[in-house]
Image (cartoon, rainbow, N blue to C red; front, side):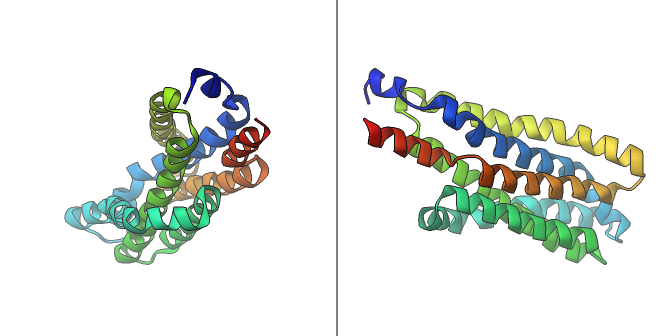
Length: 202
């Protein structure tokens, strides 16, 4: 790809729609990660059980990585991200209503699966449409947005727990974040469409 082609990449049209959903989703995930063992303990889990429940988010990511590539290729990045957000909301609902640590673990597992699909869908756009000259910077920026969310999420959780006194309320942060992701994905133009439209005009 030539420098001229790279220069015509519609950065201004895709930056918000490419990175904002990732920031929102990762804020929600970062908000719940620190409190999973606490909630598990309050549901009766011992230290080992609480650690196992917390590990379910990573187990879910590993399981989700297996079908995520095929799913994203079949239904597209934006639809996959919306579906992942809906699945994550379902996981949050199970976690909030969980009567015991095992059910909480199931909810966390679903959130992990959703995270894998969401992350792969966003990476798919970067590797497919961003010009090679800028791809490394785009991918590193994408990684930075995930880490930014993981940084901000626990601070939001701290404020919610301070205000409400209940650690489980941190799950509502993730639910709101997922709803915000869906709204952003629906309202803002799909970055893949923006790139393809620009290419068609050349």
